[in-house]
Amino acid sequence: SVSLVDASRIAQAGATVVVMPDPSKAFAVDGVGEVTMTPRPARFLTIEAAPFAVVEDGADVGESALPLSRAAIDFSTAPQMAIRFRVSRRDQKDFQDQADAIMTAITLGLARAADATLLAAITAAIPAAFSLAAAAEKGLRFDELRALVGTAGAGAAVSQDGKLRVAGVAAELTADTAATFVGAFSRSAVAVHEAIDVVAERTSVAGDLVVTCWANMQALLPNAGMFFKVSA
Image (tube, rainbow, N blue to C red):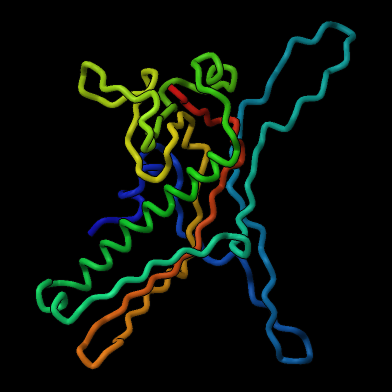
């Protein structure tokens, strides 16, 4: 069987895809026997190098921005995703191990949904144009850069070693965005709510089965400046 992480292109590029429990905790309300849900802080944190500088004798030390970036995990604002399909009685007879096949298809679909969630967040951030100089300015190493090439194919080329690359950066194809992005995917994540509901319903006397799956995902992009867009 395939796992969500194994099937995700953003995970292959270095992003973290994690199935998260609900970041809230139940508390009893004193004296009334009721229970209330209180959010617990949960976040994805990235740490950059602190920017030391030379200070002349007698001069004051200038203040720098805190080299930490964080993205809060809040499933109350995360979009809900769903898939629904019908399995006829004939299909049920024709396919052996159908339940396993359906779950594999759902897992592959969740991986693509995670990819689309993060890529949409990167798109919304309107990243700057990619160049090696821009990546160097952010303090990025070349070997931590990865590229995902969308359906427009911008900037993609197959090198002499048979590998797909964008401006020399190792790349992979994705159908979940039109754009091409280069960035440090290890500085990003997608949180997937642990409650992934799969419901199977018999909908007719003929034995047709309707399968519905619901999931919540949230892109975690503490520092969108670590990503760049390639236009040509």
